Image 1 (tube, rainbow, N blue to C red):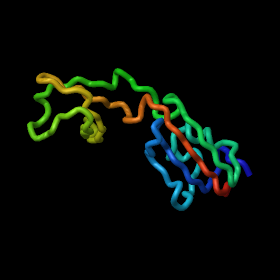
Image 2 (cartoon, one colour; image 1 turned 45 degrees about the horizontal axis):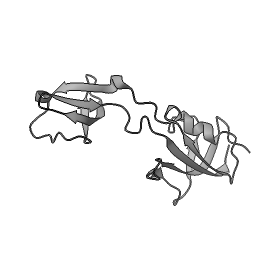
Image 3 (cartoon, one colour; image 1 turned 45 degrees about the vertical axis):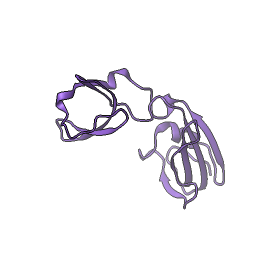
Image 4 (cartoon, rainbow, N blue to C red; image 1 turned 180 degrees about the vertical axis):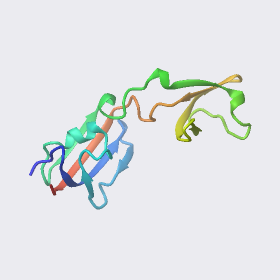
Length: 142
């Protein structure tokens, strides 16, 4: 049986960066039960699984458009430094949580700091990057 848009399967996977750094993986663990179309995996990764069969392994490199998206300049926000407490270490690269009007927290990464402003990047941290995707389909249950 081949993996289709509505399949339930057992699989191991890995996500890697271009330098080989592992972002997420269960290749050394037990296969997980995964329901296609359930929203737990990005559509670009699911497209790789379509048509695979039990026992098949596949490794691909997905461009940003098929993975975590392109970096969007509109997601870079400049905020007055005075809006940050003195107890917050404002260093490039640190991730901070920002609350919105609905009470939802949104992560942002400090991209720049000067005496007047803090530039915060609200893009996904992996936006704009090629992502390696390795999948091992153990079984197609449905």
